[in-house]
Image (tube, rainbow, N blue to C red; front, side, top):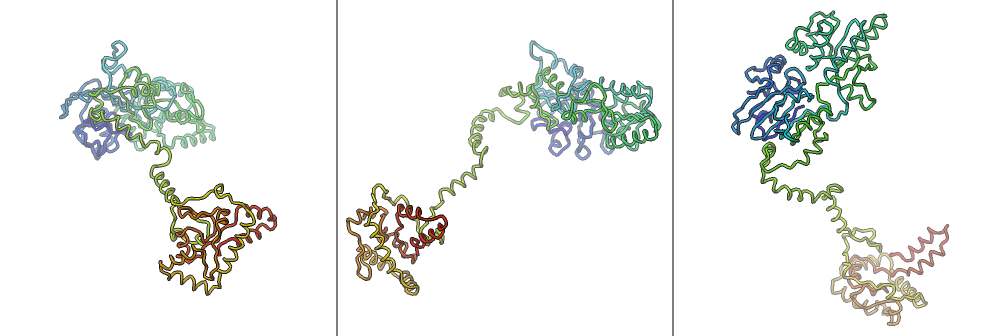
Amino acid sequence: MPIEMPKGLPFAVDTWSSESGRKRYHFLSHAHRDHLAGIVSRASYPIYATRVTIAIVLGYFPQLDEANFVEIKVGETSVINDADGVFSVTACDANHCPGAVMFIFEGTFGNILHTGDCRLTADCLQDLPLKYITKRGKEMVSRFDLIFLDCTFGRCFLKLPTKQSAIQQVINCIWKHPHAPFIYLACDLLGHEEILVEVSRTFGSQIFVDQAIYHDRFSTLSLVAPYIVSNDPSSRFQVVGFLGLYQKAREAITNAKANHQPTPLFIRPSTQWYASKVRAHTPSVTEPEQDEFGVWHVCFSIHSSREELELALQFLQPKWVISTTPPSLAMELSYVKKHCFTTRWIPDDPLWRIFKFSFKKTISAPALVETEMVPLPVSVGVPSEVLEQVEIELESTQAITLFGRARFGMLDEFEIIDEEKLEYISLEECNLELDGRLTEELTTVERRTDELHIDEKEKNEQRSNYGQRSIEELHVEDRKMDNGKMDNGETTKPSEEEKKDLGFERDRSKTCIGLSKELNQSLKRLYRSRNVPVPRPLPSLVELMEASKRVKIGEKSSNHSTLNSSYGIR
């Protein structure tokens, strides 16, 4: 499908959309159906085209008004007085199909060549104006600023034969099958007229075209070469369509062999079969090739090969090239890679006007590029929104306590002590020694804890009393606990020597390692406010290690349960 022209141009070529409808002038390169999509509903004066193209289009769409068309002749230049400036247009032969032309536009927007659909052979290039094909030193006298190029076979590396060579292959294939009662030519497309004309001239026979089935083909041939058209269905040469060709060929050849009669000849001049088969094997483009259905293929092309495109661009030396046939792109061509991407546009270059850019915008372009390139490292990997979310989640993650009933509750219900306000005494500073004094202290703690564990009824009453205490009562209780006094009057405060051996410090600014009653006051208030008994100290690491060594493999689970019940929070 053709492409829309840039906003800076006052004309449209081969497009009939709402966007192209805003253009003041329209140009039609040729009458292929894919270039006429939407012309019935959006045709408006003026539409510039050749006489043959206008006649073919009116034959396709009789409802179109002939007054909307303006005839343009090959080789002649028309001057158009536009409100934005005078510009001229010259039509050149496109070597594609009857009536097909290329357009050369010259104006304040620069020099532009629109090839439409074309085959840029050496003879076709010689028909361009002299200033574009004449060199002054190493450069042309005049260069195209922009070429809208037909890159249909830009991705195909086949060396396509010339049209004359392909036509001769068709004729030779017919000569090699003299006993074929019927010769079916799959030439139902606009652009195959040259083949039919040469076949008719060589063999001195007209060609039958079924008007009911191939109306467009019949009307076009009647317009371009009416002397070769036959209405006799018994003619040896007949035109068939591509649709259903293989099935028809297989049935006809099978029936002829079954009846012991000469088989008919089916010939399809096209490049599509060769382009699709190029990956499977290397087909011969110099001789006809027969497929599994019995159809003979000849490589006939009305589009430029990749080699022809490269030679044409090297000859014309344009500043910039745009493909009119995506997905085949002009940037895939070697000339465009080497020359167009390295071309620097000067501030008053016409290309800025074509694409609606101004020189002021180009000044700020480097800053814009730098701004856009900043987030590129993020976009290549993980999106920045995801990274920000992950970072927030990491910062808000809270530590999980492994002690007491907090393991079974919601973390949000407890106060989280700021780690920065706590100081820990390392094992080296404590210099704890596992001697008899530590064992005696642990025994004392177990005895005191057993006295604190009352029956279930008293425990519930005690918890309710804790919840009803006032802050002042809690302070009084804290002072009593600090003095080492229990309700029964027993003193549990360790001596100075014991505190030294246990690594115990009375400094309130440090988290103490020692008896549970000497925990930080805020921690004790926290446990009491939640009706949770103050936890007992955990056994030393050395003791646990010694106990684990004594555990047998078969009794591992039971011993672990014993340790958990002995040292866990009740």
